[in-house]
Image 1 (cartoon, rainbow, N blue to C red):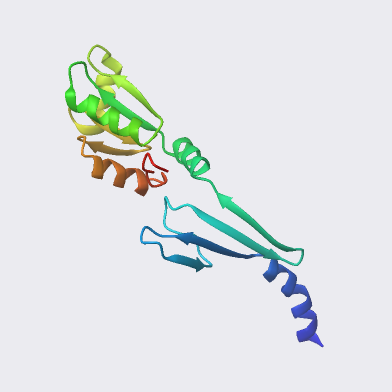
Image 2 (cartoon, rainbow, N blue to C red):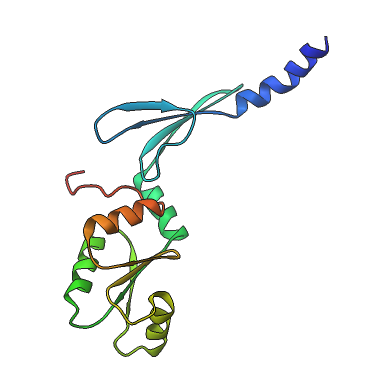
Length: 157
């Protein structure tokens, strides 16, 4: 009797907490798990409750907006800096919203950059509180993914 009463109380709570995640990896493999996929992966979530199942697709744009809000990207740049231009082009090509701070004549920006990296070194990219130097595309994309940004989509998608 007591076991039945406990089950009657707990059973609805258990059902309301069940979520199944579905995603397709880079190799085309479909995964179904009860834990969310790796950061940056588009996925569908299906929640099960006593009222039935609900499905929701997590949109790439929603994930991007959330990442940009939680970990904004700032490019510290200087005039006549070819690497700075390249880094800005990388961010633009993979549709990452970012702010640019020119450090040439802005003393406060120079001080902030020295505080971040110990010198006035450009290009410097901040993703939230993480700092990245240089303009290597693979390093930039990896740092973005590690900081919650969805994986970059090719221009064909």
